[in-house]
Length: 103
Image (cartoon, rainbow, N blue to C red):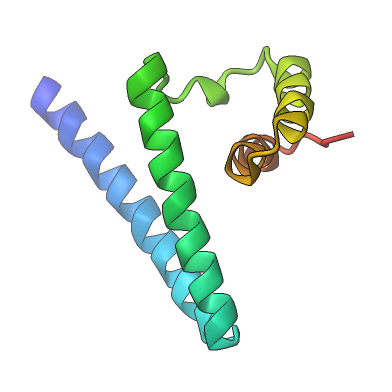
């Protein structure tokens, strides 16, 4: 049963990644090549930054919890003051995915 659940979860993840890839490919065709390069470079840098934070602090998908909207907004503002655009982008991504305003 555990193997079935693991396979089911892997299939759901793969399906989500395929859907995302389709959207990326479609939108990439509309972008200027320099903008496409910017988006690709930035997303790689952001993914690397998040992976390091997950390893360093033991984070996983804590951003999916429902009870931290105010804390997330406060961390966004704190990281704006710190000045690292990747940290700011990470908190913006969390808020975007959750449908939370930065206001």
